[in-house]
Image 1 (cartoon, rainbow, N blue to C red):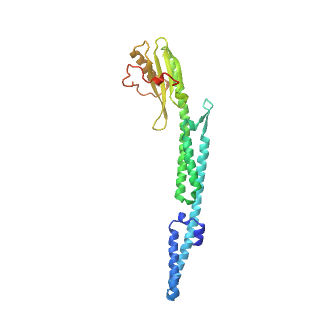
Image 2: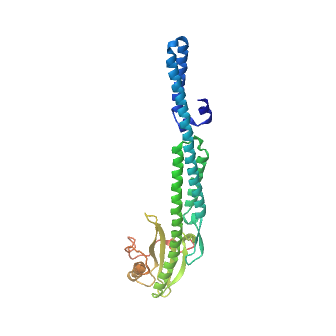
Image 3: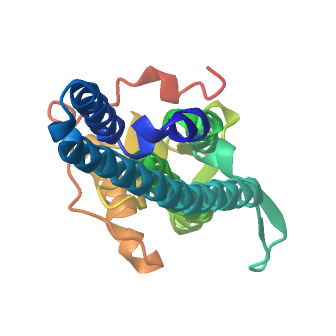
Length: 290
């Protein structure tokens, strides 16, 4: 009993068992005292003592086995967290060589998701560093959380790459739109990402210098329920110039409706209620720097 108490985490690995052995131990001591007064009780005392010895031996064997099992679970958990840490480090920068040579900063393109995963992983490391008070179930919980982080690192990396390509698509689409509308006399006045941030919306400002007709085409990245990214297109007529409103609206509708020709999935074109024949009131689209 002294060996068990001094050298093993019996209450963690075999909860409740030590109290039972101590109760049996106290019982046989009581029987011995009774036998000293009444020798006829010596057989009962021996039986109680034998039971205490057997249960103490059994508990010692069980706690040793439990310690070995705990160690296996600890090593598996440590390995899982180490793998996740290496995976996270390797995913911080993703090199693309698909016709371009560029490195994608995963944390930037996911707006800090990788940093959040690193903080969660650090928290698990801290828990494992203080694992002496954990049982096997607690270790398995940490291991499971590490596996979840590993899966999320994969998802985060894939999202970062998709977000980068979607950003490139916005520029290509803007160029295609400009080429299509050049036949209508529209030329590029300005174009930029919102806030000069490649992750953000892209705006294309076009004007017909003869009629004064001005339009802004905005592509905004939106995250779908399945985690993919879709570029939503919107047009804002800034000025009809000398054109009548109906013809100007036709131009805007044609821009959005023709996106299927360049492989873009486009929903039914609609107009914001109240602006069927009116210029846009989103004045921030006029001044791109603003």
